[in-house]
Image 1 (spheres, rainbow, N blue to C red):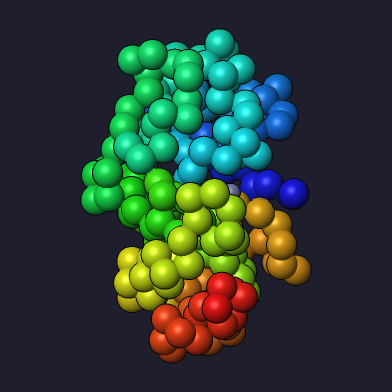
Image 2: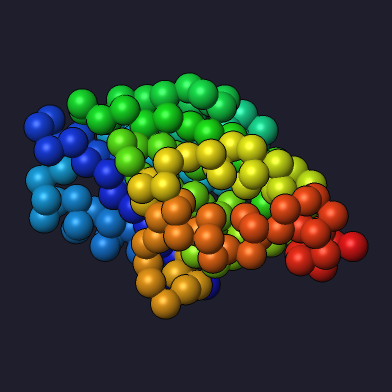
Length: 200
Ligand SMILES: [Zn+2]
Protein backbone atom coordinates (compact mmCIF):
# COMPACT_ATOMS: atom_id res chain seq x y z
CA UNK A 1 0.00 0.00 0.00
CA UNK A 2 2.54 2.64 1.18
CA UNK A 3 0.59 5.77 0.25
CA UNK A 4 2.21 9.15 -0.01
CA UNK A 5 0.19 12.01 1.45
CA UNK A 6 1.43 15.47 0.53
CA UNK A 7 1.07 18.72 2.41
CA UNK A 8 1.52 21.79 0.16
CA UNK A 9 1.81 25.04 2.05
CA UNK A 10 2.34 28.70 1.23
CA UNK A 11 5.20 29.96 3.35
CA UNK A 12 3.80 33.50 3.37
CA UNK A 13 0.12 33.00 4.23
CA UNK A 14 0.54 29.60 5.98
CA UNK A 15 -2.42 28.19 4.03
CA UNK A 16 -2.02 24.55 3.06
CA UNK A 17 -3.54 21.82 0.95
CA UNK A 18 -3.47 18.11 1.72
CA UNK A 19 -3.31 15.71 -1.20
CA UNK A 20 -5.20 12.42 -0.73
CA UNK A 21 -5.70 12.46 3.06
CA UNK A 22 -5.92 8.84 4.18
CA UNK A 23 -5.13 6.44 6.99
CA UNK A 24 -3.63 8.69 9.66
CA UNK A 25 -5.47 12.02 9.95
CA UNK A 26 -3.95 12.88 13.37
CA UNK A 27 -0.47 12.66 11.80
CA UNK A 28 -1.55 15.01 8.99
CA UNK A 29 -2.94 17.54 11.48
CA UNK A 30 0.18 17.25 13.60
CA UNK A 31 2.47 17.88 10.64
CA UNK A 32 0.43 20.94 9.63
CA UNK A 33 0.52 22.28 13.18
CA UNK A 34 4.27 21.72 13.45
CA UNK A 35 4.77 23.92 10.39
CA UNK A 36 2.08 26.40 11.46
CA UNK A 37 0.01 25.64 8.41
CA UNK A 38 -3.75 25.96 8.30
CA UNK A 39 -5.36 23.30 6.14
CA UNK A 40 -7.80 25.10 3.84
CA UNK A 41 -7.90 22.67 0.96
CA UNK A 42 -8.03 18.96 0.18
CA UNK A 43 -6.97 17.80 -3.29
CA UNK A 44 -7.96 14.34 -4.49
CA UNK A 45 -6.04 12.60 -7.26
CA UNK A 46 -8.89 10.07 -7.46
CA UNK A 47 -11.42 8.48 -5.14
CA UNK A 48 -10.09 5.00 -4.43
CA UNK A 49 -10.52 4.15 -0.75
CA UNK A 50 -6.82 4.20 0.03
CA UNK A 51 -6.60 7.85 -1.10
CA UNK A 52 -9.73 9.31 0.53
CA UNK A 53 -10.43 7.37 3.73
CA UNK A 54 -9.34 10.34 5.83
CA UNK A 55 -11.38 13.03 4.04
CA UNK A 56 -14.49 12.76 6.20
CA UNK A 57 -12.50 12.88 9.43
CA UNK A 58 -10.39 15.81 8.18
CA UNK A 59 -13.60 17.70 7.32
CA UNK A 60 -14.68 17.35 10.94
CA UNK A 61 -11.46 19.03 12.04
CA UNK A 62 -11.18 21.71 9.33
CA UNK A 63 -13.48 23.64 6.98
CA UNK A 64 -11.39 22.63 3.97
CA UNK A 65 -12.78 22.76 0.46
CA UNK A 66 -12.33 19.48 -1.38
CA UNK A 67 -11.35 19.52 -5.05
CA UNK A 68 -12.27 16.35 -6.93
CA UNK A 69 -12.61 15.76 -10.65
CA UNK A 70 -16.27 16.04 -11.67
CA UNK A 71 -16.32 12.44 -12.91
CA UNK A 72 -15.67 11.11 -9.41
CA UNK A 73 -17.47 13.62 -7.19
CA UNK A 74 -20.35 11.16 -6.67
CA UNK A 75 -18.00 8.92 -4.69
CA UNK A 76 -18.00 11.48 -1.86
CA UNK A 77 -21.23 11.22 0.12
CA UNK A 78 -20.32 13.92 2.62
CA UNK A 79 -18.91 17.43 2.63
CA UNK A 80 -21.92 19.27 1.14
CA UNK A 81 -20.91 22.60 -0.35
CA UNK A 82 -17.25 22.04 0.59
CA UNK A 83 -16.99 19.60 -2.32
CA UNK A 84 -15.83 21.39 -5.48
CA UNK A 85 -16.07 19.56 -8.81
CA UNK A 86 -13.34 20.53 -11.18
CA UNK A 87 -12.11 19.92 -14.70
CA UNK A 88 -8.78 19.78 -16.45
CA UNK A 89 -7.01 23.12 -16.80
CA UNK A 90 -8.67 24.72 -13.80
CA UNK A 91 -6.44 26.06 -11.07
CA UNK A 92 -6.68 26.91 -7.41
CA UNK A 93 -4.63 29.19 -5.23
CA UNK A 94 -3.16 28.05 -1.93
CA UNK A 95 -1.96 31.37 -0.54
CA UNK A 96 0.41 32.53 -3.26
CA UNK A 97 0.86 29.10 -4.84
CA UNK A 98 -0.96 28.19 -8.03
CA UNK A 99 -2.02 24.57 -8.40
CA UNK A 100 -3.23 23.44 -11.81
CA UNK A 101 -5.34 20.34 -12.38
CA UNK A 102 -4.50 18.01 -15.25
CA UNK A 103 -7.10 15.34 -16.01
CA UNK A 104 -5.31 12.03 -16.56
CA UNK A 105 -7.91 9.24 -16.86
CA UNK A 106 -6.85 5.61 -17.15
CA UNK A 107 -6.43 4.36 -13.59
CA UNK A 108 -9.90 5.78 -12.90
CA UNK A 109 -12.16 8.02 -15.05
CA UNK A 110 -11.52 11.10 -12.91
CA UNK A 111 -7.85 10.64 -12.08
CA UNK A 112 -5.93 13.90 -12.08
CA UNK A 113 -2.45 15.24 -11.46
CA UNK A 114 -1.59 18.48 -9.72
CA UNK A 115 1.00 20.83 -11.12
CA UNK A 116 2.66 23.14 -8.59
CA UNK A 117 5.60 25.20 -9.77
CA UNK A 118 8.07 22.64 -11.13
CA UNK A 119 6.43 19.73 -9.29
CA UNK A 120 3.85 17.26 -10.48
CA UNK A 121 1.83 15.17 -8.06
CA UNK A 122 0.79 12.15 -10.05
CA UNK A 123 -1.49 10.03 -7.82
CA UNK A 124 -1.93 6.56 -9.29
CA UNK A 125 -1.36 7.72 -12.87
CA UNK A 126 2.44 7.86 -13.12
CA UNK A 127 4.66 5.94 -10.72
CA UNK A 128 8.44 5.93 -10.68
CA UNK A 129 9.26 3.29 -13.30
CA UNK A 130 5.60 2.37 -13.54
CA UNK A 131 2.02 3.48 -13.94
CA UNK A 132 -1.25 2.80 -12.19
CA UNK A 133 -3.33 -0.31 -12.78
CA UNK A 134 -5.88 -0.03 -15.55
CA UNK A 135 -7.74 -3.28 -14.81
CA UNK A 136 -9.81 -2.08 -11.86
CA UNK A 137 -13.43 -0.91 -12.35
CA UNK A 138 -13.39 2.34 -14.36
CA UNK A 139 -9.84 1.72 -15.53
CA UNK A 140 -9.01 2.06 -19.20
CA UNK A 141 -5.55 1.27 -20.59
CA UNK A 142 -6.05 3.23 -23.83
CA UNK A 143 -6.96 6.31 -21.80
CA UNK A 144 -3.91 5.72 -19.59
CA UNK A 145 -1.70 5.64 -22.66
CA UNK A 146 -3.17 8.93 -23.87
CA UNK A 147 -2.79 10.50 -20.42
CA UNK A 148 0.84 9.47 -20.08
CA UNK A 149 1.92 10.32 -23.60
CA UNK A 150 -0.39 13.28 -24.20
CA UNK A 151 -0.98 15.11 -20.95
CA UNK A 152 2.26 14.37 -19.11
CA UNK A 153 5.09 13.33 -21.39
CA UNK A 154 5.69 16.80 -22.84
CA UNK A 155 6.32 18.34 -19.42
CA UNK A 156 9.77 19.77 -18.88
CA UNK A 157 12.59 17.32 -18.05
CA UNK A 158 13.23 19.06 -14.73
CA UNK A 159 9.64 18.58 -13.53
CA UNK A 160 9.77 16.63 -10.27
CA UNK A 161 7.42 13.65 -10.08
CA UNK A 162 5.69 12.88 -6.76
CA UNK A 163 3.71 9.62 -7.07
CA UNK A 164 0.80 8.36 -4.96
CA UNK A 165 2.57 5.24 -3.70
CA UNK A 166 6.05 4.33 -2.56
CA UNK A 167 6.64 1.52 -5.06
CA UNK A 168 10.21 2.41 -6.11
CA UNK A 169 13.55 2.69 -4.30
CA UNK A 170 13.30 6.48 -4.29
CA UNK A 171 10.30 8.67 -3.41
CA UNK A 172 10.73 11.39 -6.05
CA UNK A 173 11.81 11.32 -9.69
CA UNK A 174 11.85 13.74 -12.63
CA UNK A 175 10.03 13.68 -15.95
CA UNK A 176 13.44 13.53 -17.65
CA UNK A 177 14.40 10.36 -15.80
CA UNK A 178 10.97 8.82 -16.30
CA UNK A 179 11.07 9.56 -20.02
CA UNK A 180 14.32 7.59 -20.22
CA UNK A 181 13.64 4.74 -17.80
CA UNK A 182 9.91 4.23 -17.39
CA UNK A 183 8.82 1.46 -19.77
CA UNK A 184 5.24 2.73 -19.80
CA UNK A 185 6.34 6.16 -21.04
CA UNK A 186 8.76 4.56 -23.52
CA UNK A 187 6.34 2.06 -25.04
CA UNK A 188 6.03 4.08 -28.27
CA UNK A 189 2.60 2.94 -29.40
CA UNK A 190 -0.73 2.14 -27.85
CA UNK A 191 -0.34 -1.51 -28.95
CA UNK A 192 3.02 -1.84 -27.20
CA UNK A 193 1.58 -0.14 -24.13
CA UNK A 194 -1.35 -2.57 -24.02
CA UNK A 195 1.06 -5.52 -24.27
CA UNK A 196 3.09 -4.06 -21.43
CA UNK A 197 0.06 -3.66 -19.17
CA UNK A 198 -1.13 -7.15 -20.06
CA UNK A 199 -4.29 -5.72 -21.53
CA UNK A 200 -3.90 -7.44 -24.87
ZN1 LIG B 1 -6.00 4.01 -6.99
